[in-house]
Image (tube, rainbow, N blue to C red; front, top):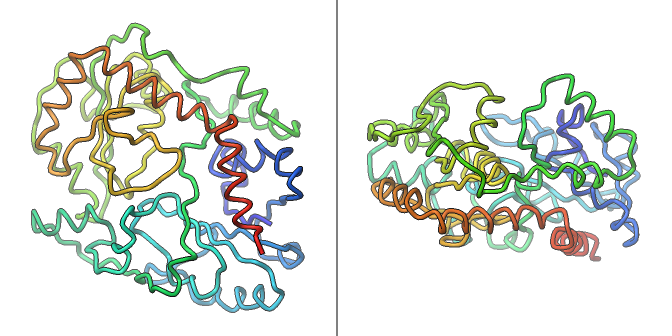
Length: 364
């Protein structure tokens, strides 16, 4: 059973984080694995051999998973049901290790390359928050609370997959269009044909009128998380032929991406963001802070192959920006490579990746 939260109510259930289990359903059935999605911990959950728990389902108290759920976890343990926790929080550092005593496996969308980080006191729970706290004396009003990793549970920690598995669309879909698409997915046992028939990828080589897009929210209340965006804005960099700090609609944004050469994606609540995937699908190259400390899949964060990283203090932004703007061949190479990685998610490469995870999960 896969316990999901409110994402199960609409189109995002079919095209979002959990779509691989529907997309590759027939392949997994050949392995003898059958899935059912549930929206509550009921009798169906208790009849499972294995249960996937989405972290989005569970409420928090003082930033930690409400310990009232732990008695339910203990019941699942008594029933000898394997518990697999899926941490869907935004950052590699925002963990929920308080559940580790109760679960058999713990999967996370992105994890720190150096696991020693999880044993340390990190300001704000994120390496970049810790960096800005130490370098720029940035403080948060309320301290971030989290449970550090302990050695006896480290072997439970695994990498899952990130939001790059989403079935992205290069064009904005209004409410009616989304409902029509939802109905198509609901009445098809497999929907890979729908996706492949209308490939969303735009060729990077098409004529691009805009040089640069940089739009993001400054409404993040936690200072150490917001600071990177604030730092870039305070630099007051002047870039011609750009959309810079404008508030634009989702439809205009996606349309602009298809006519743009470069975008900037800065950290928000986490490191991995929709922006770099949306840009890749639209054929634009993304610039973002260095991701070398992060392990994630699909990995479109390969320096010099899929993107050019900038330093966390953003001092080399202009150098990287003009290098990409003036080197058309390099820019096209980066986007083409990133597109190939995203395309592979719903092909044999992705199938093999999810098969390997399933074999690890069902292993006795």
